Image 1 (cartoon, helix red, strand yellow):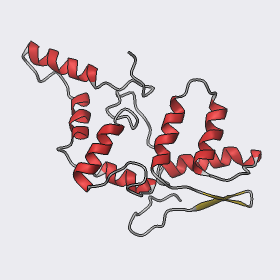
Image 2 (tube, rainbow, N blue to C red; image 1 turned 45 degrees about the vertical axis):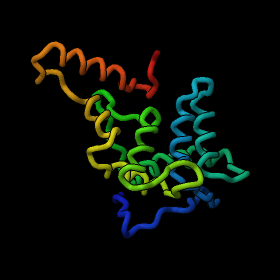
Image 3 (cartoon, helix red, strand yellow; image 1 turned 30 degrees about the vertical axis):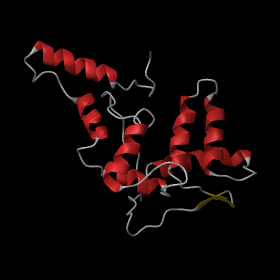
Image 4 (cartoon, one colour; image 1 turned 90 degrees about the horizontal axis):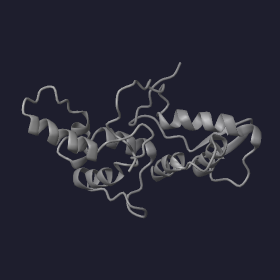
Length: 181
């Protein structure tokens, strides 16, 4: 039975074993950003992206070919903090890790006093995700997410509707995480 990770009681995994071989897992939250940047590359096929993703999180010289698929499945479970992945509906996205990275940086500095730049705060991925989820309202990030999801149906004034649509267009998130220009 799968169970959610308790951040107070459970220890973040530092390694995984696949086919009798132990692979050290680098848990630095910045690697999650590197992984998402990798997904944006259009000049690589999915197989190469999967292999490079594994190399990001498992910094070893020898990764055996017959371990790649299982290591990638382990990464997907790790990204979800050992919880089942939530089904993605057809709703528009209101948040994108890469597009919102500057606002994430500002919110962490504003709320937690954490400078997320390299060489500053040292956070593992699960702590980062918990803190990200726990950000309160009152940050630029929360304002932009709220703005992206705001409906125009309660607005009566055409100028307000137009202004909201312009702001939503400016801060939009495309399905693939990239904004077309």
